[in-house]
Amino acid sequence: SIDIEVDGGVTVDNVSEVDRAGADIVVMGSAFYNSDNYAAIVKTVKEKCS
Image 1 (spheres, helix red, strand yellow):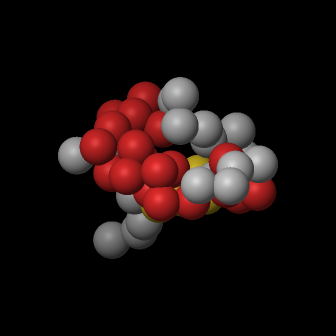
Image 2 (image 1 turned 90 degrees about the vertical axis):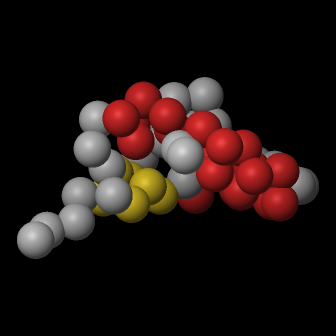
């Protein structure tokens, strides 16, 4: 089995679409780099991808 990773352009606004498209792993460097509240981003991503 091969995991599919998406790196680049993934935001809290489109992460659910990326998840539905089949991504196993998402890299959201800019989303974290541009935020002071990492916990809120993690919470939002978990909610949108569950």
